[in-house]
Length: 429
Image (cartoon, rainbow, N blue to C red; front, side, top):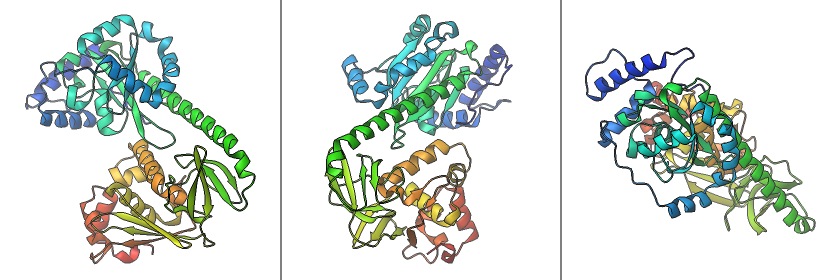
């Protein structure tokens, strides 16, 4: 994470809160103000104003039932790390007058802990278990804005949209499943605005790192159990093979050098694995046995950029095709254009979003893409595996820069291709 603090060391908090309040009233009313909101705040206010929420009153809170909150807790992978997260703030919660809040991926508060007097104040705001704290529900707030921006957010005082939230600060960051890149929820630390300290962002970062590291440890324990359960069968199987879990993470390898993860296996569908070629997955215990379907270990990827993006993989005597989102098609195209040297996560963020502030989002998108393609995408930096050949099909377009997907893209790197009218010969075929 980069520094996302709303204040700097030495900020006069009461004075800054008054300045923000005057700015909030002017900007929300459509008047001129000598002070402008930070970019992330301005984007959020714009979204919230378009939704028709009222900045003067408390917008509707409709908390879920206790039974529904309990059901969501049981279903959430974060339930296995909530005790560790509580320990992060237990020593400082009372003296620092703060709350730790953990939501699910929909912004519903599932856990809340911290100073008793601050919890009571939060109750009057509707900031309690079962409440949905998205921008659409309660306006600009760190939880909802972190969901909307897919990035960590800190808000101070009148940077919140609702006036009832102005006496607060809130600091939030997304937690992702380290195996899949899937968004699991938001960690938020909130408290009275005038108690905000610059170190709060570090506290939230610590909570996210702790949660994701604990989730990874649980993942490693599951791989250990899979290896133990499959050991008798593996001892009787000959030839190169992989043993992987439900998400394609490798628990055991024999006769082949493999990355830590391949694509997510599916029944009766060939799977592309660099070093093995196309394979047919076989169910075993709580995972999959992966063995080559033929002798040819080289893979060919055809990236289809016609109106419905797709990817087609060919190897040995097998072939399969899968639809792609526009974002995943853009990532594959950028990887192809980057060549063997590849591209870092920060550079990919710059290419797609125009800044280096979306590294977490890039990593999550690449992780989701790997669920389809597996280890054909290598890391550090991101690049296509050496055993992979890619071709680009942009249909009836005369060149890559004429391709509809490229022309419609918001990616600065691809927009530059259009502006420069790059010929399709620059694409590695």
